[in-house]
Amino acid sequence: MTKTEEYALKMNSLSIYKGILNRSVPREFLHLLESSHSKPAEFLSAWGNFFALLCEKGCQDKLCTYITKAALYDENSFSKAAAGGKLGDLPESIISAARRDISIIVEASLISPQQIISDYKYEDEIKPILDTLPLWQTGQPLSQMADINSAVASSAEFYLQNGCGMFARYKAFIWRDGSIHPVLHPDSVTLDDLKGYSYARNLVINNTRAFLNGQSANNCLLYGDKGTGKSSTVKAILNEYCTQGLRIVEMPKERLCDFPLLIDKIAMVPMKFILYIDDLSFQTQDDSYASLKAVLEGGLAARPENTLIYATSNRRHIVKENFSDREGGELHRNDQIQESLSLADRFGLSVNFSSPSKQDYLDIVAAIAQQRGVDMDQSELFKKAESWALDRGGRSARCARQFIDSLFVNKS
Image (cartoon, rainbow, N blue to C red; front, top):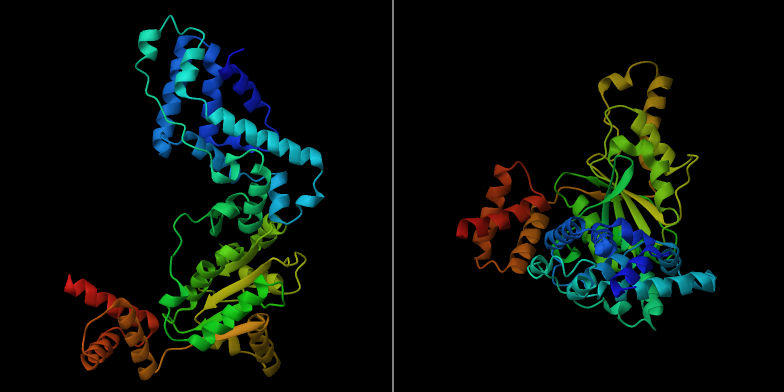
């Protein structure tokens, strides 16, 4: 048995980390190893397909690095237990199987392309063609898996700090088509980028910290005028605390009825989740309205301890009230009003982000200008900032940031 055939069999015998064979590069690599005794046409086709995939993924010079990274981010019984701090609850058979799998993955992905060619059954028959095949470089395994003697402990430490599966690879997600999808390029705004509203923002930050520390925390409604930094606050909090196990899943308002499905997917994940609903409002008390009420309190699908709901809205009471809602007798009007108020009241924490006063607006402008290194006389800066806000219908933190941005655009 050749070395190539041996590792083809070993790769097929993976157990704990067998999930990596569902990923394109490990799967095509195994197919190439298995084709080492196939007819030339099949072998050459497997080689060409594999190398093309490596180039597409940008790993033609680091195959072992890429495959061990796929293994590190695999979600399996070992990684989930380690992420939840419950590695000690696993039987030794699972830990031994994980150690064996890691050893196979590392050793197989370090096989050189030259070795595969020399092991090919029909090498002598098509040697002129084999000599022209493009070659890849194996690179090195990730540090967590480089030493097989410490690979299990190192990987377990990684899972404990970063979670497992896609929740270790990504920090922001969106609920779509009944599944959780990662956001590949989330907003990079930081808390240092946000100026003003320190009192309101600290309320949300402190609530989030309590949540991460396992203390009592509330679902949070960030409400107020447009452009005041409500959504940016939530995104900046994610970027600040993602290294402490915080993740965010944005849920479209119209899919709130899927809440039980989402909960089923994250309830047992050893991370902390903010379920984020942006720009929340209802024209009437529709199905989504009823779904959110059930989510916040009183529904059969209980919100798990690893989950909070953060919503932003331009309205304190979320439901847009029309004059028609006030028609009818006094009892009817009171019922309508109380029903509209009840949804907002189910958020344990409501934080107001109102339009800034003139002085607050100018303070925000000055802070952003200093951070961005704007060299302009302050009186001229404030005069232009006020003119900018007037042209755009009012003062806001967003308006201040856009004004400073415009200075760099005009300068260039």
